[in-house]
Image 1: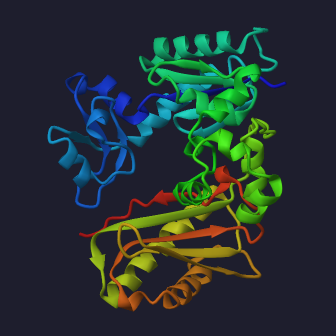
Image 2: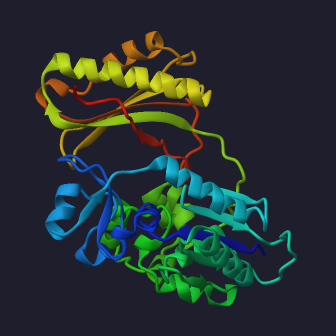
Length: 361
């Protein structure tokens, strides 16, 4: 049986900003772009009682918290702190799977210091993170990744929560199904229609019925409701896609401007493909008409997509299939991925990276 720790930094971007700027400490802040289309990347714990959270629009966040301070992102600083934290992880094990800058899984079944109890390792890691960075982290400890990740969120901030194998079934049974990995709003709504609101109710659904309703994901949900998650901690993961997207300050509706932005996105995508040495044959176009309506179109080629000349004609073709002339475009994205996918893997979904080209002069 494995010993897995999930470390999740507390309000990471916001905490770094408050650490580095004493004037921000104890005040409600949000990290993100302060504009009409800006989105909250991270909210400090002082802002959260007002209902401010990540992925919320800056406009809405300010409405909920009039005293909210908007701080621009400083990614280079966050990356440097993240490197410090990962150095601490590797003092205990080399089986470290980064999920993002501020969270990771550690397999400490066998560890460099010969510590028998995973909770003792988690405590030491949390203490070293605080000593070296002045930041706090929360930790979840269990026998698989699913439970460790859920556990790390149970006593935030600066907490530790353990899910022992003997308590796993009761723990999962009491959880809202939204807490299970891979259960998004649409899946949760479908489960609610089935009368499933908690893990215990999900456990009562037969395997056949789960797979009939949810396909391949049905097997995963069936196993998760029983505390079964055999996924190992993966030290390195093959990148599945490279993409970039742009949220416009004003909706685009003039065709010439739309084509120009598509051209700029293509150049950005080519640069990212080259920098990441990524090879893929499937191009995907993503558009948003408004805050809730999103469409994607994909096309697979028999060759690797590398250059502007490979990508731009395909991007224009995909755009022509969207009916974009009837709508104003709020967001546009392009990504290149492999033509062969491995079915569902929540962690390997296409990763969209906000581009940094100027929107306007």
